[in-house]
Length: 494
Image (cartoon, rainbow, N blue to C red; front, side, top):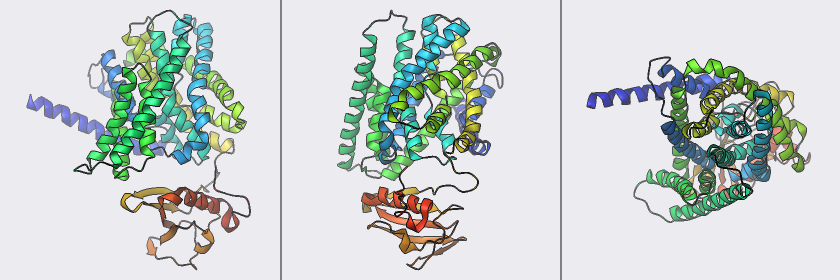
């Protein structure tokens, strides 16, 4: 028994290490690492090493548990100041856009593939949700506005809930009722309220707790979000939305040992993604995928070029979002593990044709991830939403100093930045923020008022938490417009 355990633990550790290294490979190739994780799972399965795994119910349960942790990590690491301007567009994208996408996809697949109406809409519901892990592993290398990133982040964090509700309803086989929309509204609203309430209570309790070890704070924070999921599910509300919103509230509260909590959540999120994608790859049977290529590609074309653009246009046109941004948001709607996990629900329920759906979704996810993920930077440049050449907007990173109520901001002056040649006094950072260190050519300097910033300089700024957002906006403004940024109307907002 001990020997078998050592073999299993060794295999898990080896897979984990290989998956971690795959992140670096995926960044160089320019597409999300989920494709490589899925490939690892397939190689471990019946077509590779020969491990047989066909338990759809267990896959669904483990997949849902992983999604809860992934949403928790997403909520904890989302800064409200970054997504506040995109809140309502994000909410509409995660609700109205899901409904429109289901309707358009279902109707199109009914006519093209000859699917029964219920099954066709089930396909649409499974494919309606975008994937945060897939989206942001690509967006990290693209310089686009915060409003776009914020809308995508909120959509990816919240649209899983709406899609999940519709999939469960259609897979149950019950007759449709006029009360179904009201039930969906109830589940989303109550789930959201539970998440916000438990997030607020959890943050309040953690600030006033004196736990005996620092490492207990991250555990308690994640536990609050998981508790929100289970509480929502217990009252038949949306547990996924509750988990995300609880984490969002906690992540933007002044928690003790916040930096440790965020690092723990990020590691837990990566572990959940790796385990989920490898598990899904292990479940797949390559022998069945050939028959799923045609329906998978047809569904992918419908979702990408019909359902997604229409749903984005219907959702964002009232907000006067320019067509270029709508086009980018349409192309950035990457599908990842969520559609595969959702497809497991009808398979577990024994819905006729569910196995075909799972295989088609698997094919679709791989193809769209590679095609959309690799071309997203090109689309952003073509639409004029990203800077061309080597010039990129300054990227500000932050490391909190909890006990001092301050934060360290670090950034590198990119090539072509209007900050080049600006004196430190001309940065005009708000009171409570100061440049404490400048690193040039690998040598650290203590800067003074007469120090001039150059391309490729690395700067360390210390700021109080109260002026953090204003400091970041000022840095971006000078990066874009130089020392006269304020006169030119540049505020650093996106």
